[in-house]
Length: 174
Image 1 (cartoon, rainbow, N blue to C red):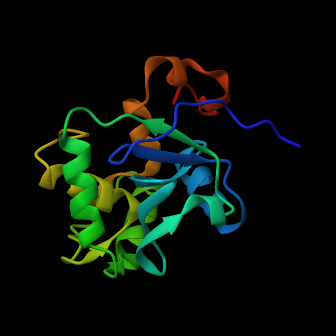
Image 2 (image 1 turned 90 degrees about the vertical axis):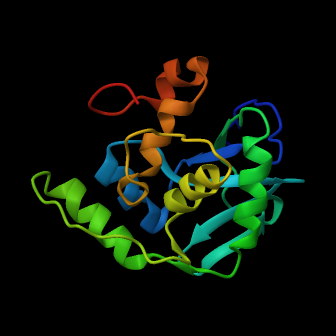
């Protein structure tokens, strides 16, 4: 049995960065050369607001198979406002085209497809980035929300987690 990492409990508005992919989600880790494959916003009481292929959902992590995540603490009230906005998006659609564009642009580095996600369609990263932007917080300045992958959120991890050898890319640090 694999030992779970010890961590502080997540608070509403914190960002959850998932690792230890299985099945199809391993493709994301393969394309990005990162252990991270998914991101969501903690909704308190071990729940997460996230964009999944079924759409934007509020999910109980105790009932899910995905428990391997790191917590990126939200600064100030930005996380609370972001979580509230994200909850309002529950029921919106998943951005399948955006994911395909992201993969193509990551595989073919010189390719740039001018794609903008329609309102009410989100990838997991777009949901988190847009929620924090609505709260007035720019998490990853200079990056377009549709071009962000879960691996990009590793830059927001506390220094101790970034230094952890488990979370280094095959081709360098996360």
